Image (cartoon, rainbow, N blue to C red; front, top):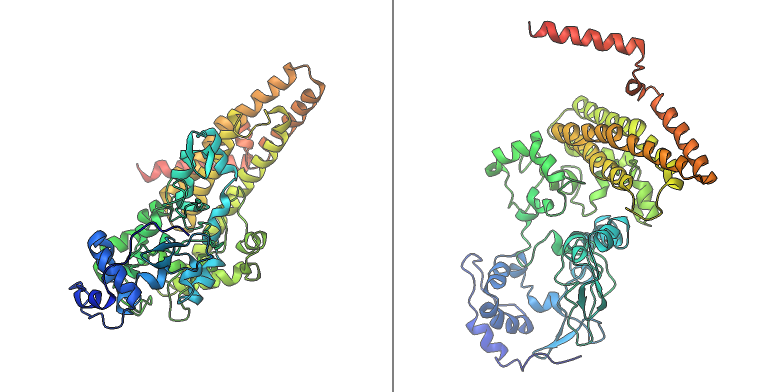
Length: 481
């Protein structure tokens, strides 16, 4: 370990006498540890905002200070000497588990804690190669790394924090509060991704905007969906009735004006405790091209949730819903949601995957090296997800205009024409293998477009369906006469 700072200087007893306590706290520091008292004496001047935030926190009221969270062992890879005390900059879930064992156990078992495993995936190929380069050089990345990945993907999903020889953290990987951060002590996750230091305000965590740092944008616009939904509208209209800072925050007991993200996915009900595994109330995983049940994705990641069925998780969520809605309403909502999942899957996702598989021999074998790669990626990764997420959270505009409309428009106006271009190029190549692949792809396109879901595109709508469309048009005209 290297000494990067001078001697401690101020005596602990003097620090205890001189400490200024924030007026908002209303407590006297009589039991704070000597180590933390010494930290505070300096940081209240060097980092006054951090000191103020801590002084207004439950940690302060519980006499939990800087040292209790930041203390480390000499053998820890990221430990360093700070005025005679061995500490670490990063407070990992393993550190938080000293006091919050149950919460950390739940969190570590969740997809949130595993978000850092995206590193090296197809999404990161975009940020590291397609969008980026290797011009960002740091001590731990002497060959360079993409600044697009560092400032984008890693800040939500989490970086793999690298410790340099002098004990400092590599600037490509720190600062970082990505929720799936891979920490020097081997733990996964970042509690401060949601519980922003150093106040760790429960009121902030319950606020929808807290989730919106990451859950937003073209591929998973949950905060935009929430804001559009009746839930979001009710929250903004009644925020003063939400009792957000209440220590006990049970829907139907402590508040009833609206739900937030935390209400539905994490917070207590009359029958359920708080959970830090946000997947325990989700009955579809809408991240892949085709939605899968959450226990399937948990099994792939080796998580204990593999043993919790989607039916149990749906019942958990319905236990939240039933506080504001009756069972018929809740059941009907899920019928609508499941219907949208099936529509997207049957009409676009499954045929799209089959078409792309048939097209592969005719494509340049480099990820995102073909125009059609971008079309298909955005169709499922952006537009298909938006449609599914929109339906899951009752956001009709995003479900339709930013979801299924975009999926359909690009399926018919981009994907199919681009597949036909591949057929033409394959046949013009005079390569027998590509000519054969072109024939296979053409047959697959014909099969897809002649199915009931797509035959309208060929001007071959089912006569019964055509008559029904005509009838609806007449009804529309009469309605506005």
